[in-house]
Amino acid sequence: MNFLLDTVNFGLLSGSAFGPREIWSAATPFNKGIIVILLFLLALQVYMSIERGIMYAQSNTASRKFLKLFMDTLRRGDFEAARRAATTHNKSHIALVLKHGLDIFQYEKQLKALHENHDVIQPVERAIIRGTAEVTELLKKGMGTLATIASASPFIGLLGTVWGIIAVFSTLKEKGAGDINALAGSIGEALGTTALGLIVAIPAVWIFNYFTNLQDKTITNINNAASQMIDEFIRRESQN
Image (cartoon, rainbow, N blue to C red; front, side, top):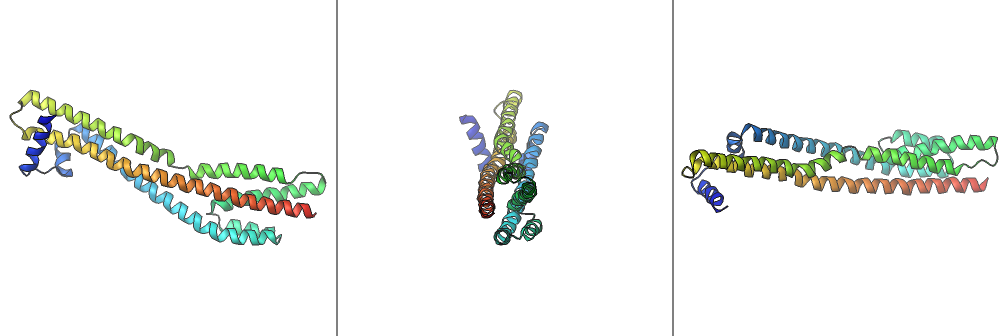
């Protein structure tokens, strides 16, 4: 271990650069593959973060506009206007669930006109549960990939580190400890893959937790809005 630290210190003091270009040049074909994989995972993480971020931003904006309009029209009993509001703001996950519940309510009302004792509310509640489950699956899109990136990237980087250390000892066996500069590239390669793995993994953990919290918040908002809608349905049914 002391020998490895002395080697790194020698490389730094002698002005040798351990930048990305030098590490790539010194890397073995195997570790170049490791670096390419980690860079791909980093690019995938950035793409997914942007895509999920835009989706949640659009959903939140549409939900704020939709809820006020939907509840106002629902209290007036204007179901057609309520449906149009849900259709207009279809980027809102709340609108997707409530529109489904509203459609079922109107269908069950038609059945009740034929069968006086028909229960209207329970089918709506079941429809809300199904709709919420479907929306939850939409919100989970890509989250498994983010979790995999966060958990696997350090191990991929560590694999590159182990391979680089093997290259160090292979060079030691061939050339001995006299030529320290011959070892600097392999050591930089080993340390570089570890660093890259952590660079990929650390933000992935934060992003995964961030979107998980947004997902939970969205589901809570759906449940609250659906509860208000069902309460309004129960109130209207009790007046009949």
